[in-house]
Length: 283
Ligand SMILES: Nc1ncnc2c1ncn2[C@@H]1O[C@H](COP(=O)(O)OP(=O)(O)OP(=O)(O)O)[C@@H](O)[C@H]1O
Image (cartoon, rainbow, N blue to C red; front, side):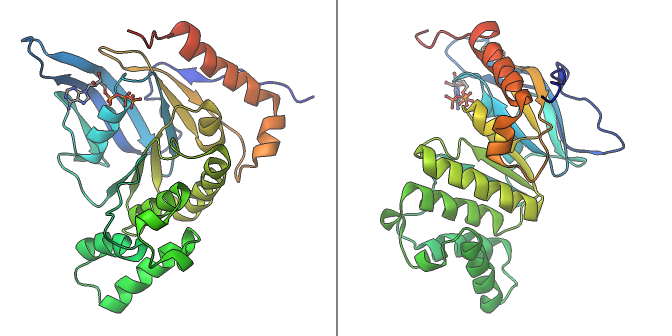
């Protein structure tokens, strides 16, 4: 039997990787939402994370700890109260085509076809490309997610998995540097979810963009991520630990699940979430 390696975690989340420049930097980020109380509600306090180019990062933590708030500050839809988020050396202050988000509820425009939903983003980011070039980008991305046949269908004519494929194609069609996924497979059945996880890994392998993904599913994180960021509970949540996931790529689900380290990591994350940072959801 293969020897089990010690689980590598860090509480600093800024561990330097050999000779690599930080790509995305979350530095001293706090967020306070206004409330009727003068001090407001501190969701996040002093969050620090360094992400390297091409990494696949999953983020896990109990409901309400501030995961979406944190990723919304990377997307630029939300702003830190203190601290800053930088992409390369540029401070993020607003949304931009270098960072695209995919949400659990797909967020497709219901009156547009799959083709038109993707075209809309391509057209706004590449206004100087010809119609033929833009059409080709859309067709290539529909093909990438296996939906060429569904180009003319509207969201109501698509299954949940198909809608999420369109949303992923739409995000990637404009070639973002960072893909931000907020529980993208949370509403899908188990089989569709596994299919899409595998497709996402293939696409990420081809594109090599940097991925930040919120999930509630430890197995999903272990299959997809290079590192699993584990949040503490709110209020004033931050990053408790970061777990390194070293399974070789390309990943094969069966092979990973036969690896004794899989259960070591899984149990470690479960223990973190349900014992050390147990959360009373009735609160
Ligand atoms: N715009 C806002 N104004 C005030 N409070 C907010 C706002 N957005 C989020 N919150 C609060 O901040 C906390 C964190 O919310 P957030 O959605 O970031 O958590 P989460 O970890 O992503 O939760 P979940 O896993 O349930 O999606 C919650 O208590 C939420 O009610």
